[in-house]
Image (tube, rainbow, N blue to C red; front, top):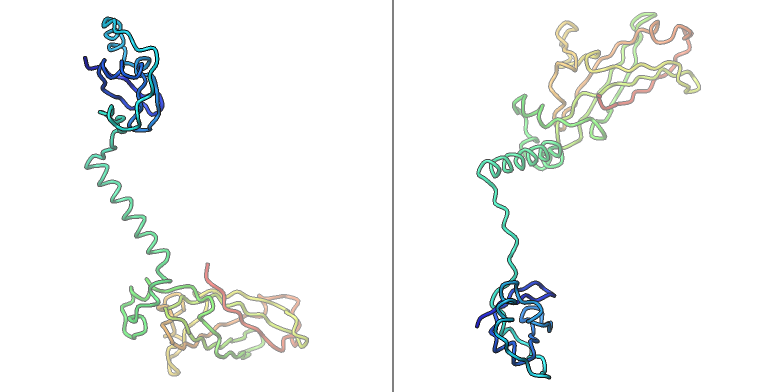
Length: 254
């Protein structure tokens, strides 16, 4: 008679015969985990009743069976595999694609610099805008000058050079007016919308665009900009002859 018993150690289900249970006083060895247990005590409910009706006596003593998988016929039921529907697979694919594109966008300045196309002139405006990075340390001040146009107006002339591998946005200019000891008497932040780009030596003031409306500074491009300061708006307590020097810092736009 074929019976079923379950290993209490690994929950593996076995098929055994009444004759096999009589040989070793009901002791069997699991072919999966090699543990010895009582096959009679762990019969399934239906087979336990069937075993009681056989009235078969067991030997008084018996040794456990040798190790081996001779009684193993079924393995534990595996967990059911998770299956995604077509809509779920499509949604997951779209989400992963969006995350990949977002990662590429935020890291674009790291990998775009290795493309030689940005070292060339004549790139479309949208390509320059796409690749433009913050001025950071790649934009340097090559030259500067301060000219008094009248008693209340100063003109700041700057020459900027982009030394980086990518185009850069126009910076915010921080102009400090200094006294003879080098102390700051007044400061002014000048944003790209407030200073002009000198495109050529012959260009007039009416044709000079503000930096806000100009393309980002190209790779290895040198540009000249003009900024104007009204001393009356900087500091009402500024003495007429106090300013003897100036200092310019290039800041990232926010």
